[in-house]
Image (tube, rainbow, N blue to C red; front, side, top):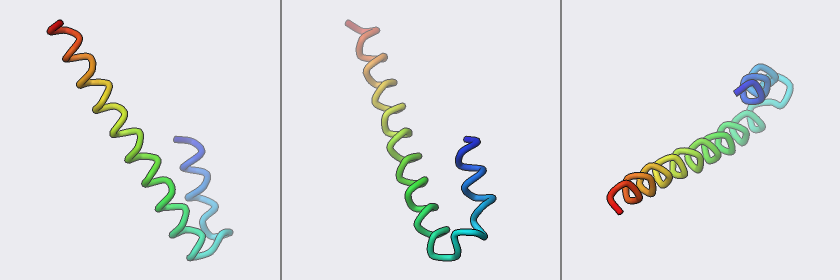
Length: 50
């Protein structure tokens, strides 16, 4: 979270295009992490019924 905050604070240094690219990359990382959390939850629920 600290790394993301530092990236967005330094957005003025990387310009408008760099900021857009950085936002998309961080969004993809957040989406991948979210999917992994959901998968872990489903696996845990299935394991509790076995």
